[in-house]
Image 1 (cartoon, one colour):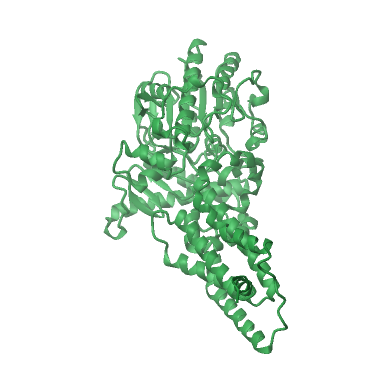
Image 2 (cartoon, one colour):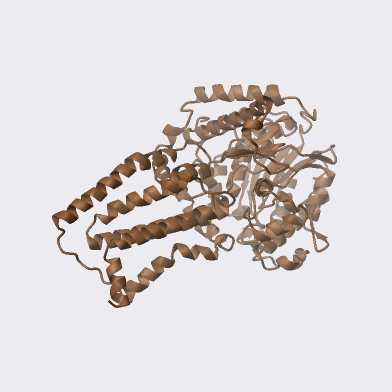
Length: 626
């Protein structure tokens, strides 16, 4: 038998199904080991569940006629391979996997394409190598699909037994894994570990049609009762003011500056003798620096804006803006409209991007300023108005506003892919990244350095136009800029922390820059964990405004923990990611060895997190504040 005949015989037999099944198993383990099991062993139930799903799949395909069997198995191989590849790429980008609910985000495909240099890895070719070989065999006519003779009674009996075995395995194991994928947890890693990636995606499709039924609160009355109880508990535990400054900003201007992808680790750092962020460093040293500000989700600029203006958690990856934009919230602008502040929102992109035209067009703003409303569009970086040009024109507009005003401005020049395409004067990047030159990390540092230069321009423009001294300025990064395990990033971090732990990397991933200028307050550093949900209630507190509904708390009170929308908890001492960890040592806590007081404390954090996420999810999905 020739090699060609042997290959043809294998593909035209049930051996082909078995081989593809084994390859799919290996691809699935490649996905697991590159994502949820990066730093820990796979759990036995994940392995058993994955094998069971593929065995059940194989049982049903084996009983098909020859041609149908080959075609079906090939299509399934392609579909699963593409899905695993997509999940792998997306996980690198946002530490999460794909969901059918994100279909509405396909309109931002161009933006997603910009991130490919960060997320594509050489090993990902393994998802498609066998498919390419198979295509080559068909195109080269090495393989010919044969039509088998009519099956004998014995063959029919064997196929019937195989089908029954598949049904029994699915009933005993498969249905349980699909159920485990239900939205019982907001942590997708946990869902995948318990349900496998296949069980997760099957359940995800079901969840897309039953999201409202799965929310905890179906009506406002039930939700507001638990919300009031939660806020009462927070007031009792954390209500005491650390800094009694209520109403200090009455009648003063407020500017909120959101910086693109500026993580906390770049602050107060030098590279080859020059500060990466000299202007931000000076601003933070002169005013209030929050060293432990965390983003609310592993995702987008839109999620940061949503958290800030509503004080509730964002839905997954921009969905709050793209899918739930018609909802009614107790938003930031509504709060400032109580005392006739002149309110505005500014961004150097077009209205369609992240649906901002619709999102902010529905809010009661005095002025919505997007790209088309700016006069000078002469410098664009990666398609957005350059930060410098954005800031200079913003100051000109603020000069004309009636006082007091509140303005939210969103910068974008330090956006992926960080190449600063369109920057007309490269001398505005004044650091030498040395060995990181032309790497993704090196490009990131240069983009951050330019964003810092532009921030310096903003401060100078405010001073020259006599708007600085009597204006409160809150500045923060929107989300992470780099993958958690970027090799150059880890190398950079180890230069100042040789004992870098896994927990350090996870906290570094979510921690963003944050500073606050309050006229009359100088040089304070606050280390307690805070988040974007805290901004609205804090500004209401400082400006003596009524805040009707916020899941966040006053930045200057004593609450000592924050949560992310995927069930992570960050406290001053502990970190929760399916298990509790000691932040200082990076070691997982042994629950059995903990004292009763510590267990009660950690349980209280967890229960508060669940209530916050349940309320937030229900408010968004069921529009409970309408």
